[in-house]
Image (cartoon, rainbow, N blue to C red):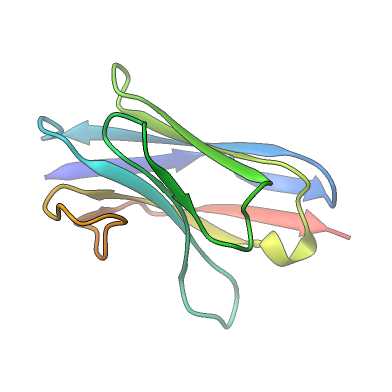
Length: 123
């Protein structure tokens, strides 16, 4: 089993920045992609960004491209999401996820999910 714990959420004004982190623990041996998703009230969960095991490949949703940056530190088993130029429509619960099984890029599915961290952007 793998446990994922997100942190760094909070309240920020529009135009501001926030950095989310996700720490993986447990059976983390092996190569795995890590991604971020979000779910706003009344909406379905949507993909935000994903990073490959080595960090050389990243993929972003069009809605966050140019504003969000995903990165990872494999020595610490963490993945980060730097969010800038935040908009009220970025308000959501943000989840990190890990893909251990698929070799496709970007991963079409994920094996483990965190509990989420709330991000609220005020106008």
